[in-house]
Amino acid sequence: MPPIVNHRFPLHGWMGLLLIAVFWPLNWSLEGLRTHVLFFPLWLGYALTVDGLVFRAKGSSLLRRSWKKYVLLFLISIPAWWLFELINLRTQNWLYLGREQFPDWQYAFFSSLSFSTVMPAVFGTAEWVGSQGWVKRLKIGPAYGRTPGEVRVVWGIGWLMLAALLLWPRYCFPLVWISVCFILDPVNVYLGKRSLISHVKNGDWRPVTALWTGCLICGFFWEMWNFYAFPKWTYQVPFVDFLHVFEMPILGFLGYLPFSMELFDLYHLLMPRDQADVLPDVAP
Image (cartoon, rainbow, N blue to C red; front, side):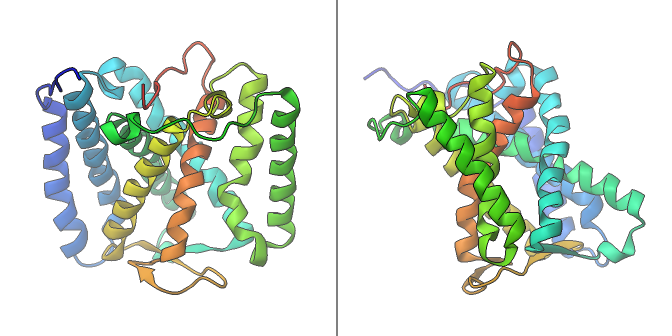
């Protein structure tokens, strides 16, 4: 086995740690409205920190490979998360305490600024997870999507799930976190863009596992830093509103798994095919 090479923790990683050290205590200790201006620097700190961890582990990272594409991740994150806010108008699974204290234009601006940190955080954490030995050692798993017919079945199921979600949101609300993936991943296959099916058709679930785990880690920090924040989000989820971890019902954390795949598919759909290499194989 080749020796493990740890690279020097980069300057931007230290800057990220500094941002967390400053804005985490402020977010939890200041009185009144504060999180609308503190959320972005706190999560920028997280994204820079985890990118630094990736560089230390691999000698390469999202930011170091291309700072322009790294900035673009922030921009693409905004419409990606607004899509889920649009669906939530129907499901009403989460709401924001303090929303009423902002005019619409301020709410849209600060929300978009906060939403911009989603993809850098999730993809950076997923790449760090993918650099770990336990992910690289995962064995081949079940394969799916080897034929165009199987891909079309996934696409059709995705549309059925979205329809059920919109028709019966009280009972089908969990489908918000998987229907978009089932619809978009086959579209990316058809367009010749990177897709998750391109991995799992060979039984390689390591990139998916890294995405799942990375998003769960982000989910823990999202929920923890939200707990003493204001404005903040809370949940009203039918049937599973018990055993809360922070504000989130414990079963709700399962939604972070397919959410990571939806982010992956949305990113690769929106980026030109020859430019969508910002997220390399997370478990090479």
